[in-house]
Amino acid sequence: MNDELSTYLSQIRPPSASSMEMARKRWSQVAKPLNSLGVLEDDIIKIAGIRETIKADMEKRALVILCADNGIVEEGVTQTGREVTALVAENMTNGNSSVCIMADRAGVDVFPVDIGVARDLIPGSRHPLLCRKIAYGTKNFRNEPAMTREEAIRSIETGIKLVGELADKGYQLIATGEMGIGNTTTSSAVASMLLKKPPEVLTGRGAGLNDEGLKRKLEVIKEAVEQYSPACQDVVDVLACVGGFDLAGLTGVFLGGAIYRIPILVDGFISAVAALSADHMYPGCRNFMLASHVSAEPAGRLLLDELGLKPLIQAGMCLGEGTGAVAAIPLLLMAADVYGSMSSFEDIQIEAYKPMGGV
Image: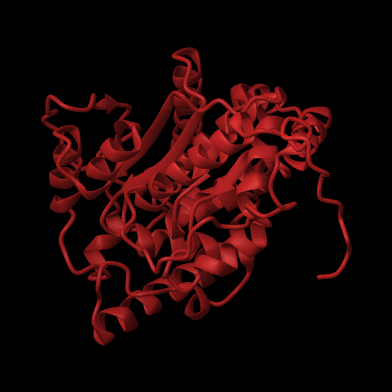
């Protein structure tokens, strides 16, 4: 870890216990049954601790989509070629992708980021393309490490700086997304090495592999885990050996949430692997994360359990791009409205609910 990255991490402080306690007290005064909004209440309390205020303002909301190509695609682990990454990323800048349409409905500003697409992108006119390219895609990790350690650190720092830029613009909530053909392969490899679990437990069909393709994908991941694990000293080494620029950049976004005290929404499988990577780099980083949904990928639930995060949605989603994170935002906004606007028991002059025990 270099001096700049260490300086960033030294700025992290725990969430404010006093703000969370005040938020918890406010929920207990809202004229409804105690804890009846479940995880939504927990997340509002968490936001209060992160933001160090009893308020739960989320008026400015952003989706950061890290786009990058992965050299491992050369091994036939995907249904489509890597050229699709650039095409979808360009569509995002024109507002023409699944998550962009969803973001319009949820009132979320979209920021596609070229952190490592294999060609230069032609930006559209709808959403600003942020060019932060580390390189034109990673290398094929079956033959050599995906990137150098220096490139991995630069990618992480890029993610941190993106959050800093959004913080300066007044954003109060950030959703995470990604686009990169082959990134379920990189994510499975990283997850296997960090969790020390066999790839079979963590690896799915991605964007629709058949049985033969899945078998090939598993073989490639198992071989890489066996090859690189002995030499990896930390999470940066893991990301450098088998990760991607998008994964490393998202790791930085989660760290940036802790540094700049902005809640970061975990999306699906790939985003959750980046969240796990961030928490390995700085234990406790999970306290600045909110889980949006449970990915339908095999490791979806396992990763959230490992991070101790409770999801808001279980809808069998596995699209990526940040779709699950954006889908969760209206739920958080509704909870914030109840939290901030609803009458208290005292206001309507009825006796407050009391904890009665039980399960």
